[in-house]
Image (cartoon, rainbow, N blue to C red; front, side, top):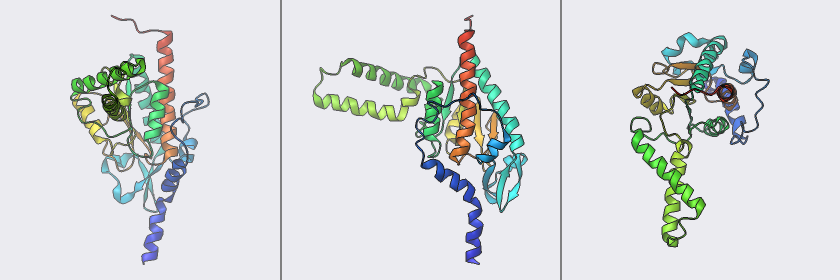
Length: 273
Protein backbone atom coordinates (compact mmCIF):
# COMPACT_ATOMS: atom_id res chain seq x y z
CA UNK A 1 0.00 0.00 0.00
CA UNK A 2 2.82 2.41 0.84
CA UNK A 3 4.45 1.94 -2.55
CA UNK A 4 1.14 2.74 -4.27
CA UNK A 5 0.89 6.02 -2.35
CA UNK A 6 4.35 6.95 -3.55
CA UNK A 7 3.24 6.37 -7.11
CA UNK A 8 0.24 8.65 -6.55
CA UNK A 9 2.53 11.45 -5.40
CA UNK A 10 4.45 11.17 -8.68
CA UNK A 11 1.50 12.62 -10.60
CA UNK A 12 2.84 16.02 -9.58
CA UNK A 13 6.07 15.25 -11.40
CA UNK A 14 5.41 17.38 -14.53
CA UNK A 15 5.04 20.53 -12.43
CA UNK A 16 7.97 19.68 -10.19
CA UNK A 17 10.16 18.83 -13.16
CA UNK A 18 9.33 22.15 -14.82
CA UNK A 19 10.33 23.98 -11.66
CA UNK A 20 13.61 22.09 -11.35
CA UNK A 21 14.38 22.64 -15.02
CA UNK A 22 14.00 26.40 -14.61
CA UNK A 23 16.15 26.46 -11.50
CA UNK A 24 19.16 25.37 -13.54
CA UNK A 25 18.81 28.38 -15.80
CA UNK A 26 20.17 31.87 -15.06
CA UNK A 27 16.93 33.85 -14.89
CA UNK A 28 18.19 37.28 -13.86
CA UNK A 29 18.41 38.71 -17.37
CA UNK A 30 15.94 36.50 -19.19
CA UNK A 31 13.94 39.37 -20.70
CA UNK A 32 16.88 41.67 -21.36
CA UNK A 33 17.28 40.57 -24.99
CA UNK A 34 13.98 38.74 -25.42
CA UNK A 35 12.50 38.98 -28.94
CA UNK A 36 8.73 39.46 -28.72
CA UNK A 37 8.05 39.66 -32.47
CA UNK A 38 6.85 36.07 -32.82
CA UNK A 39 5.03 35.88 -29.48
CA UNK A 40 1.31 35.18 -29.87
CA UNK A 41 -1.50 33.88 -27.66
CA UNK A 42 -1.25 30.20 -28.47
CA UNK A 43 -2.88 27.29 -26.63
CA UNK A 44 -0.19 24.90 -27.87
CA UNK A 45 2.53 27.06 -26.33
CA UNK A 46 0.62 27.22 -23.06
CA UNK A 47 0.27 23.44 -23.04
CA UNK A 48 3.94 22.90 -23.91
CA UNK A 49 5.01 25.18 -21.06
CA UNK A 50 2.80 23.52 -18.47
CA UNK A 51 0.42 26.42 -17.86
CA UNK A 52 -2.41 23.89 -17.43
CA UNK A 53 -0.91 22.03 -14.46
CA UNK A 54 -2.63 22.92 -11.20
CA UNK A 55 -2.11 21.48 -7.74
CA UNK A 56 -3.55 18.26 -6.35
CA UNK A 57 -7.35 18.07 -6.32
CA UNK A 58 -7.35 18.15 -2.51
CA UNK A 59 -5.78 21.62 -2.56
CA UNK A 60 -8.21 23.13 -5.08
CA UNK A 61 -9.87 26.35 -4.00
CA UNK A 62 -13.63 26.34 -4.77
CA UNK A 63 -13.26 29.84 -6.23
CA UNK A 64 -11.31 28.28 -9.11
CA UNK A 65 -13.91 25.64 -10.00
CA UNK A 66 -15.05 27.32 -13.22
CA UNK A 67 -11.48 27.38 -14.52
CA UNK A 68 -10.72 23.72 -13.89
CA UNK A 69 -11.15 21.49 -16.93
CA UNK A 70 -10.93 18.29 -14.90
CA UNK A 71 -8.47 16.16 -12.98
CA UNK A 72 -5.78 13.76 -14.09
CA UNK A 73 -4.37 11.30 -11.59
CA UNK A 74 -5.58 13.51 -8.77
CA UNK A 75 -4.15 16.74 -10.22
CA UNK A 76 -6.34 19.71 -11.20
CA UNK A 77 -6.03 20.57 -14.88
CA UNK A 78 -6.66 24.22 -15.76
CA UNK A 79 -8.84 24.96 -18.80
CA UNK A 80 -6.44 26.68 -21.19
CA UNK A 81 -9.21 28.04 -23.39
CA UNK A 82 -10.49 30.01 -20.40
CA UNK A 83 -6.92 30.98 -19.54
CA UNK A 84 -6.50 32.48 -23.01
CA UNK A 85 -9.69 34.52 -22.63
CA UNK A 86 -8.80 35.86 -19.19
CA UNK A 87 -5.19 36.53 -20.21
CA UNK A 88 -6.41 38.63 -23.15
CA UNK A 89 -8.69 40.61 -20.79
CA UNK A 90 -5.81 41.16 -18.36
CA UNK A 91 -3.46 42.28 -21.12
CA UNK A 92 -6.02 44.71 -22.51
CA UNK A 93 -6.41 46.22 -19.04
CA UNK A 94 -2.64 46.47 -18.53
CA UNK A 95 -2.34 48.19 -21.90
CA UNK A 96 -4.99 50.74 -20.91
CA UNK A 97 -3.21 51.52 -17.62
CA UNK A 98 0.15 52.08 -19.30
CA UNK A 99 -1.50 54.11 -22.06
CA UNK A 100 -2.70 56.51 -19.36
CA UNK A 101 0.90 57.06 -18.30
CA UNK A 102 0.57 55.03 -15.11
CA UNK A 103 2.94 52.40 -13.75
CA UNK A 104 2.44 48.68 -13.22
CA UNK A 105 4.08 47.35 -10.06
CA UNK A 106 5.42 43.83 -10.65
CA UNK A 107 5.28 41.65 -7.54
CA UNK A 108 6.86 38.21 -7.22
CA UNK A 109 8.74 37.05 -4.14
CA UNK A 110 8.53 33.27 -4.51
CA UNK A 111 11.74 31.50 -5.43
CA UNK A 112 10.74 30.53 -8.97
CA UNK A 113 9.44 33.98 -9.87
CA UNK A 114 11.64 36.61 -8.22
CA UNK A 115 14.43 36.78 -10.82
CA UNK A 116 11.99 36.62 -13.72
CA UNK A 117 9.79 39.33 -12.23
CA UNK A 118 12.86 41.53 -11.71
CA UNK A 119 14.03 41.01 -15.28
CA UNK A 120 10.53 41.66 -16.67
CA UNK A 121 10.08 44.87 -14.69
CA UNK A 122 13.52 46.17 -15.64
CA UNK A 123 12.84 45.49 -19.32
CA UNK A 124 9.62 47.51 -18.98
CA UNK A 125 11.27 50.14 -16.76
CA UNK A 126 8.57 49.53 -14.17
CA UNK A 127 8.83 49.20 -10.36
CA UNK A 128 8.99 45.78 -8.76
CA UNK A 129 9.04 43.90 -5.46
CA UNK A 130 11.06 40.68 -5.42
CA UNK A 131 11.79 40.40 -1.70
CA UNK A 132 9.41 40.30 1.24
CA UNK A 133 6.51 42.74 0.87
CA UNK A 134 7.01 45.71 3.18
CA UNK A 135 3.87 46.33 5.20
CA UNK A 136 2.57 49.80 4.46
CA UNK A 137 4.05 50.04 0.98
CA UNK A 138 0.64 51.26 -0.19
CA UNK A 139 -1.26 52.00 3.01
CA UNK A 140 1.55 54.08 4.50
CA UNK A 141 3.03 55.29 1.24
CA UNK A 142 4.14 58.67 2.59
CA UNK A 143 6.56 57.00 5.02
CA UNK A 144 7.79 54.57 2.36
CA UNK A 145 8.34 57.51 0.00
CA UNK A 146 10.50 59.21 2.61
CA UNK A 147 12.74 56.16 2.84
CA UNK A 148 12.98 55.66 -0.94
CA UNK A 149 13.86 59.35 -1.34
CA UNK A 150 16.60 58.90 1.24
CA UNK A 151 17.88 55.90 -0.73
CA UNK A 152 17.88 57.76 -4.05
CA UNK A 153 19.61 60.80 -2.64
CA UNK A 154 22.12 58.71 -0.70
CA UNK A 155 23.09 56.74 -3.80
CA UNK A 156 23.44 59.96 -5.77
CA UNK A 157 25.73 61.45 -3.10
CA UNK A 158 27.75 58.24 -3.13
CA UNK A 159 28.29 58.55 -6.88
CA UNK A 160 29.46 62.14 -6.48
CA UNK A 161 31.83 61.21 -3.67
CA UNK A 162 30.09 63.45 -1.16
CA UNK A 163 30.64 60.98 1.68
CA UNK A 164 34.43 61.21 1.45
CA UNK A 165 34.41 63.91 4.13
CA UNK A 166 33.19 61.38 6.70
CA UNK A 167 35.37 58.98 8.68
CA UNK A 168 35.79 55.43 7.37
CA UNK A 169 33.56 54.16 10.16
CA UNK A 170 30.82 56.67 9.27
CA UNK A 171 31.14 55.80 5.59
CA UNK A 172 30.81 52.09 6.34
CA UNK A 173 27.63 52.72 8.36
CA UNK A 174 26.16 54.81 5.53
CA UNK A 175 27.04 52.09 3.00
CA UNK A 176 25.49 49.48 5.25
CA UNK A 177 22.24 51.46 5.50
CA UNK A 178 22.07 52.14 1.77
CA UNK A 179 22.75 48.48 0.97
CA UNK A 180 20.00 47.40 3.35
CA UNK A 181 17.53 49.82 1.81
CA UNK A 182 18.51 48.81 -1.73
CA UNK A 183 17.79 45.17 -0.92
CA UNK A 184 14.41 45.97 0.59
CA UNK A 185 13.31 48.93 -1.56
CA UNK A 186 15.54 48.98 -4.63
CA UNK A 187 12.73 47.95 -6.95
CA UNK A 188 10.42 50.74 -5.82
CA UNK A 189 12.91 53.53 -5.12
CA UNK A 190 11.80 55.44 -8.23
CA UNK A 191 8.07 54.88 -7.63
CA UNK A 192 7.04 58.36 -6.49
CA UNK A 193 3.28 57.79 -6.77
CA UNK A 194 1.01 54.82 -6.22
CA UNK A 195 0.91 52.55 -9.29
CA UNK A 196 -2.03 52.27 -11.66
CA UNK A 197 -2.17 48.51 -11.02
CA UNK A 198 -0.14 45.63 -9.64
CA UNK A 199 0.75 42.40 -11.40
CA UNK A 200 1.28 39.48 -9.02
CA UNK A 201 2.79 36.09 -9.82
CA UNK A 202 2.55 34.34 -6.43
CA UNK A 203 -0.92 35.27 -5.19
CA UNK A 204 -0.64 33.19 -2.02
CA UNK A 205 2.91 34.25 -1.16
CA UNK A 206 2.13 37.92 -1.80
CA UNK A 207 -1.39 38.11 -0.42
CA UNK A 208 -0.41 41.15 1.69
CA UNK A 209 0.37 43.10 -1.47
CA UNK A 210 -3.06 42.21 -2.84
CA UNK A 211 -4.81 43.22 0.40
CA UNK A 212 -3.04 46.59 0.53
CA UNK A 213 -3.85 47.21 -3.13
CA UNK A 214 -7.54 46.64 -2.45
CA UNK A 215 -7.47 49.03 0.52
CA UNK A 216 -6.08 51.75 -1.77
CA UNK A 217 -8.35 50.81 -4.71
CA UNK A 218 -5.42 49.75 -6.86
CA UNK A 219 -6.52 47.15 -9.45
CA UNK A 220 -4.97 43.69 -9.05
CA UNK A 221 -3.90 41.49 -11.95
CA UNK A 222 -2.64 38.09 -10.83
CA UNK A 223 -1.74 34.61 -11.99
CA UNK A 224 -4.24 32.28 -10.31
CA UNK A 225 -3.23 28.66 -9.74
CA UNK A 226 -5.84 26.07 -8.80
CA UNK A 227 -5.35 26.68 -5.05
CA UNK A 228 -5.85 30.46 -5.13
CA UNK A 229 -8.71 32.52 -3.67
CA UNK A 230 -9.50 35.00 -6.44
CA UNK A 231 -12.11 37.13 -4.66
CA UNK A 232 -9.81 40.14 -4.13
CA UNK A 233 -8.45 40.13 -7.68
CA UNK A 234 -9.76 42.28 -10.51
CA UNK A 235 -8.17 40.41 -13.42
CA UNK A 236 -7.00 36.82 -13.09
CA UNK A 237 -4.88 34.66 -15.35
CA UNK A 238 -5.70 31.03 -14.52
CA UNK A 239 -2.43 29.15 -14.74
CA UNK A 240 0.48 27.35 -13.15
CA UNK A 241 2.38 29.79 -10.92
CA UNK A 242 5.04 27.27 -9.85
CA UNK A 243 6.72 26.12 -13.06
CA UNK A 244 9.35 28.53 -14.36
CA UNK A 245 8.35 27.74 -17.95
CA UNK A 246 4.77 28.80 -17.26
CA UNK A 247 5.82 31.97 -15.43
CA UNK A 248 8.16 32.90 -18.29
CA UNK A 249 5.41 32.53 -20.89
CA UNK A 250 2.82 34.56 -18.98
CA UNK A 251 5.34 37.28 -18.11
CA UNK A 252 6.44 37.41 -21.76
CA UNK A 253 2.93 38.43 -22.79
CA UNK A 254 2.72 41.02 -20.01
CA UNK A 255 6.09 42.56 -20.89
CA UNK A 256 5.24 42.66 -24.59
CA UNK A 257 1.95 44.41 -23.81
CA UNK A 258 3.62 47.02 -21.59
CA UNK A 259 6.33 47.76 -24.16
CA UNK A 260 3.81 48.13 -26.97
CA UNK A 261 1.64 50.47 -24.87
CA UNK A 262 4.67 52.57 -23.91
CA UNK A 263 5.71 52.78 -27.57
CA UNK A 264 2.26 54.11 -28.50
CA UNK A 265 2.45 56.71 -25.73
CA UNK A 266 5.88 57.78 -26.98
CA UNK A 267 4.43 58.36 -30.47
CA UNK A 268 1.33 60.09 -29.13
CA UNK A 269 2.27 61.76 -25.82
CA UNK A 270 -0.48 62.20 -23.26
CA UNK A 271 -1.64 65.81 -23.26
CA UNK A 272 -1.78 67.40 -19.85
CA UNK A 273 -5.13 68.93 -18.96
